[in-house]
Image 1 (spheres, one colour):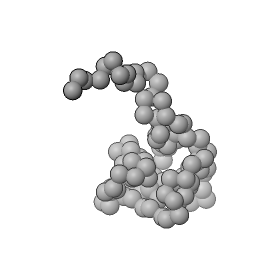
Image 2 (image 1 turned 60 degrees about the vertical axis):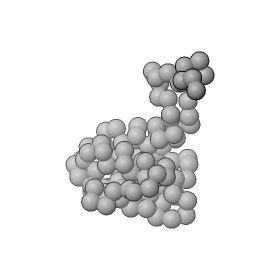
Image 3 (image 1 turned 135 degrees about the vertical axis):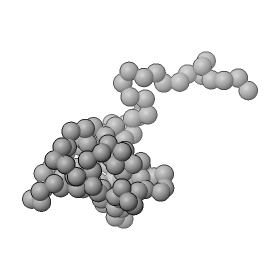
Image 4 (image 1 turned 90 degrees about the vertical axis):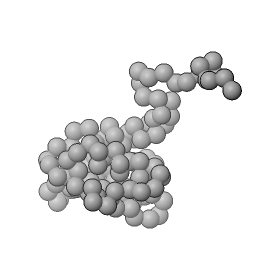
Length: 107
C-alpha cells in the first residue's frame, strides 16, 4: 500500500554527482542539504529520504530542491538509490502484510 514514486536517474557533468527527478515535490520550495556530519533532524518526507540514502552507505551528501534529489557519491556505486527513492511512500512493500482490524490489539 502507498504511492510509488516515479524516478528518472540522470548523470550530471560532475563526476560522482547523480540527480534523481521525481513526480512528487518532496521539499516544497526550499532547499534541504544533508551529510553524515549534518544528518536530518526532523520527520518530513525529505528527512526520511535523506536518512535512508545516508544509511545506504556510499553517499557523501544529499540535496533536495522540490522534486530534484542530487546525490554526491562517496563511491561510484549508484545501485539501490533509485529504489530507495521509489519506495519512499510505500508503507507495505510487496511481500509484507498490511495490518487488519482483526489483528489489532484489544483495548
